[in-house]
Image: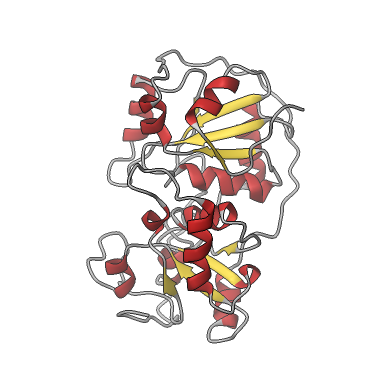
Length: 284
């Protein structure tokens, strides 16, 4: 097997492997305010050979009104969708977007959840690809169906488990939303403002440098180390508004070598749907 990437990949590194048969690239561009944006942008121009995956329909499951805005997709359905695009258990998958990895990290985490380790995010996304003077294409790739076998890993935590661990030493909740939304201010996406009691805030965009690429592993390790304090990475549970940007913090911790944290996929949008669950406001 050739080179394997399990976190980030640079634009020039990807360019060198782009047309290899055991590599598949997915365009994950999306806009929460305009759900049609991602596919329209993909049709206009994308990395050569890239397939498109939609946050709402491919990377999320059906909403019930109580399970959050982006519930996890059915694993078998996601595996079938990946296999339709030629992904096998040995495929190197690369995800990219134009939002600093905000949506690409969701696919990265989902693949790890399925048991797929050869998955990476294009560092700096579409902007880095263009800065490296790499080509774009408008042709839709031809799919070569494959077979994919799931080996689900215990990387998620349910709302009931979060409730049971509230206020206990064995869990540190890290909320990836912007500081104002964490405090309960300017909430535009969910019906209730605030955060889960005991959570601390790490805005996912703080993982990026001024160029839109992830900060160096040593910097991320120092920053997350300061947040975690005495907590082990395995005690960290990541959440956000709907389980999307939390994956960005999960990826950042993995880049930093702080492995083993989990995702509360329902996140705030699921949590606040039940009026019996407690709500905190203001700074942590």
